[in-house]
Amino acid sequence: MSIPVILASASEIRATLLRNAGLEVQIKPARIDEDMIRAGLEAEDALPHDVADTLAELKAAKVSSKNPGALVLGADQLLELKGQIFSKPDTPEDARAQLRALSGKTHRLLSALVVLCDGQPLWRHIAPVRLTMHDLSDAFIDDYVSRNWESIRWAVGCYKLEEEGVRLFSRIEGDYFAVLGLPLIEFLNWLRARGELTT
Image 1: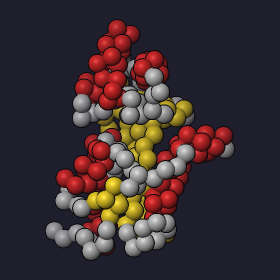
Image 2: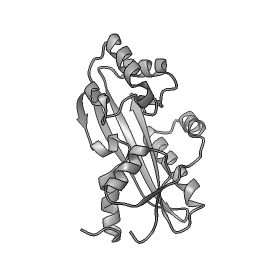
Image 3: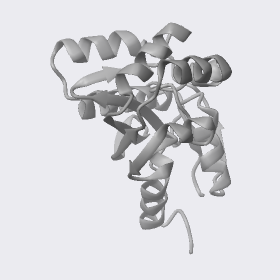
């Protein structure tokens, strides 16, 4: 890569995905009030697609303003079930309630990625994934949350496919990388089109 790449996120899995793809990435988490911004957008009846896209762009913009010449990646992921947007759980009881709401149903994950340079958006992509969850008993949910709380507290939907969370699902339609929080293939294809990557 001829120019620096900065990930405006503290997500370890996103950084790992980019580095495993052979990119040198700096990590500079953006400090924005996501809950306040999300609440404001929801109050204006913004679509989940637009909420994810806006949050990703705001994160990238915050970091891009202080890092001239760099490609800054802002990412956001949200879960939507029948128009309701789910956030990361605050407590184990929140996690149990979320899993009970998702049990036996199909929900959508929207993984947004926006790339800025010098404060200007260059590229954006939102990858939707449909996930169908098994019917989960209350006993299973209690045990699952107890075993996995320290990990799933950082995950929208209270699961990680790269961990035990994969057992929750009967069907997944979409890109695995998007479930992990980053539409990696589309981003790498964009870098190739720019001449930043060779094949």
